[in-house]
Image (tube, rainbow, N blue to C red; front, top):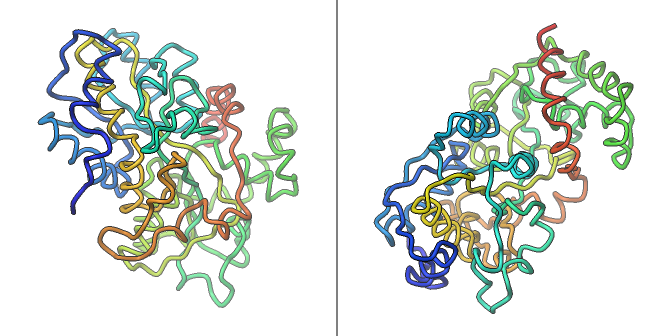
Length: 368
């Protein structure tokens, strides 16, 4: 596959990124942390390979994003930051920023402008939810199900996960409170607009756990985005939660007997942070990479490999067909109108404030 490298040239990328740390050299190797599977493949094709070809830098991949907050805390405490760029969701990025573990980014000097000259801050717009977060994609966590295991009535509601009478069998969920608590309240009659107000109370949390109790014995708890797709492919679960792009891969690329439930999809943002405390050389390289990897063309290129919507306004019109399958990617995006109509928008501030507390409560509940 050919990549268009003319939007931001090697010289302009290095000049702009280097301006942040004038006179510093750039490291020749970097470790980029992400989520693995189909998602990391999309980054490899859209970002890593063309960047390495252009600069000669060696990129080492680490699939530890699911534990990024804990590991960066430990690295910072030990005074040994081994990661250069880290892919995280919006709420963890806000946590890391608040704790001083991620460097602040000035979008209009450290990120590329749109091709028409629109400043990056305007092009990203509301996606810039934290001063340390460089948005990359809009994605959702939703459910896939085995079409051959659900009988005559295919599920069309997120609440099917709680309906073990109609859909018996194992289901998979991430072993974390985020999304699960929202779905539990939503399927216990709480209005979407009230969920976070309810969840902030002890009574609301008890209500969510009580609803989850009804399926606890039927759940396989997973920790990685690749787990549910594999369980679905193997027929070990009748339905399960994962990222919409992972389900796209199972359905369209692997041709497994799997379909997707868009109802109740939880919309979220994913993007990059640069750890605080890097040496000048490593920080300059990280900024150089970020300038390249988040420009208009690169974000559109990623959508050729996975069904996540690019975070820049200027990238959306450039989204076309899948690089290998040749199918139009627009209808497979979580932001497509027909998919967006029944979505649930995550409250990033809520989870940035309460994630540690809820993690402890959720793990205690799992252990009962």
